[in-house]
Amino acid sequence: MDEWVLITGASSGIGRELARVFAAHGFSLVLLARDEARLKELAAECERSPGVKARVLARDLAPPNAADEVFEALRDTPVGILVNNAGFGFYGYFAESDLRVQTDLMQVNMIALVQLTHRFVQPMIARRRGRVLNVASVAAFLPGPTVNLYYASKAFVFSFSYALAEELEGTGVTVTTLCPGSTRTEFFTRANIHMNRPWPLMEARAVAEAGYHATMKGRRVAIPGWSNKLICALVKRFPPRLPARVVRKVHTPGPRQA
Ligand SMILES: NC(=O)c1ccc[n+]([C@@H]2O[C@H](COP(=O)([O-])OP(=O)(O)OC[C@H]3O[C@@H](n4cnc5c(N)ncnc54)[C@H](OP(=O)(O)O)[C@@H]3O)[C@@H](O)[C@H]2O)c1
Image (cartoon, rainbow, N blue to C red; front, side):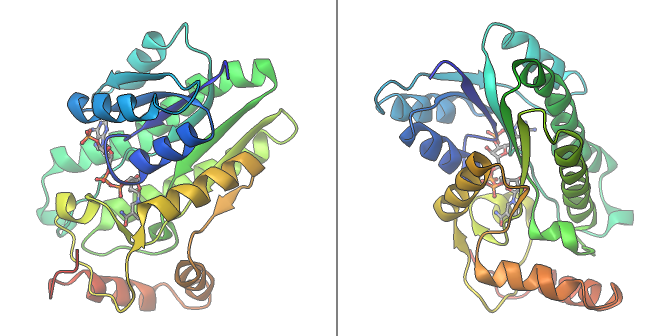
């Protein structure tokens, strides 16, 4: 295929599995994250799929000019599918937290996602063909005390992506929002986020498969897993105070589940 899939946050977790799924379907890839060694290893693995090429773009999405630099670096690479997956969380009370980390979170989870989308949808609209997959979370539907800004960033991603899907209706470009629930990746360890929950983690591969199929069908929203669908449906029935209490309890340090 002559159009490429750009995947941010491809060095681990859901992004790495998305890369494997797209490669298995014959798509060539641009793999972006900070960890170049991991990206190169993944690129070599993906290139073992027939006809698949894989480029590595080792970039930090936290600096304000990151998205422009990515677009420049890919000026000669036709990106037909953009997957905004890079993101991270951070446990702690907002008022006591390091504002630099919170600012980086806003930059990576929201601003870089918006800037990359803005840059890459324009050539897609001109070609009248393209797909965007933005990774939000079940957290998009909940207030998130102690992981406040992360939850807020995912609510932003959901609202932005859904509205954009509506704006782009009829252009040939679709926007899909993937809302995973708790998934087995490096996310919780990196973020030092505790999860006291009665149900098991989903596997990143299953989440990636759901994201891939929803994207290729042009669906607006994909919520993988029945328990996550149930949470999203139930949460709308309660005043926000109750889910806020529950979320705070869920993240209150207790026995760690990896
Ligand atoms: N795991 C879950 O339970 C869960 C649930 C709902 C939504 N999500 C969302 O799924 C997405 C993927 O997370 P994951 O669970 O797969 O976690 P993960 O294993 O920690 O992967 C996060 C990815 O984002 C990249 N990344 C982080 N900061 C970056 C930066 N400054 N610049 C460029 N890349 C950066 C990381 O690569 P480098 O460190 O190499 O840069 C890594 O490839 C995130 O948006 C997350 O919010 C996860």
